[in-house]
Image (cartoon, rainbow, N blue to C red; front, side, top):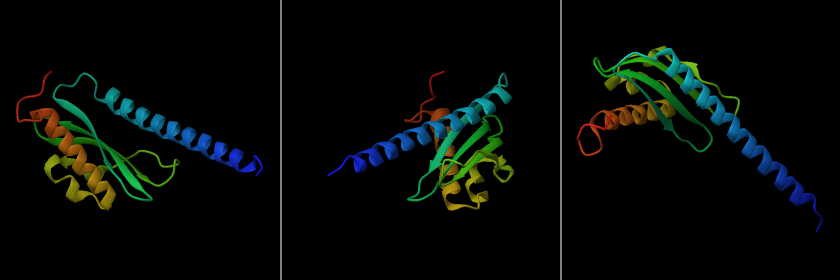
Length: 133
């Protein structure tokens, strides 16, 4: 047995780690961009959700106004590779309760449902009590 197989495994592991870090950086930059755009405005919540799949998935970032329960900004990353990027999703703007119904992609719909659920938990707390501020 030669060391060729071990080298291939090491290269694959290194590439996997590098691509994971790159995707994390893309997510962090998109979240920071949305946070900075709405900084200083009261009653806004930045939440995220994920729709997982075997080969592809979706991640969504929503800015929800607590007073009107409207999605005021939405960006999503849909795809299966590290080359996927966050893009504005104007079809998700509007009432947060029906945002998932406006998503065309199944994985995006799952991600929006998860984000709206995260918003609900943050607003009401897990046991129905107000969340700590």
